[in-house]
Amino acid sequence: MSPMRASLVPVDAAKQTVLAALDALTLRRASIDSPVDYIRRVAHPWTDDLAFELALQIDAGPPGDAPHPVQEVSTTFRRVARDAPEMRVRLFQGPPHAVSWRIYAADDSALLEQPVVIHCPWRGTWPSLSRACDDLAQTRASLRVLATQADPDRDVDGMSLATACAYRISAFAPPREPVLLAFYAPGGGWRGQAGFSLYAYQTGERTLTPLASG
Image (cartoon, rainbow, N blue to C red):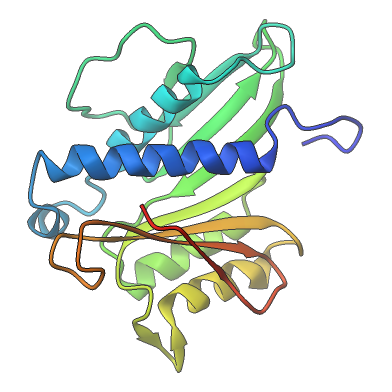
């Protein structure tokens, strides 16, 4: 975001859009497959689906304040389990394991804003998570999001996994940057029901704020 103007998408609005997409992803995955088995076979199985749900949520909201801005969601989009409806949001073939929400000028001449970047190491092993946290820390976005399938209370060097991920991002990111951490549990997992355990965090802070889980 440029320091010379207000954000096109406020951080709280971006966060609510991501949370709605995570809720939709939970409902969709629960009816399609067994998440645990799927994760074992494919390292990043839900990234395209999450990007698609994010695009649907963005499309359902009001347009941005800029004159007819181009809203774009990018990831690999190798396989989505349904056809895309007509949307104002453009789907773009981007990096393989991250989801980006971008806003361009109407004539595509300039990137105006990147409201959200989501990294999705679904397997939840620490090497994958720590690398994703490093990538998020170096990414310019209004909201950084980490989405994975892992127990957020799992011990990592004497602290919880959620705290370890937050601190890892904080170590390389500027202070006071908003972060959302989403830890998926399958049915019968550590949450007792399928869904995400969610945490809000600001880089440089010592504590995470648990959110109402999806």
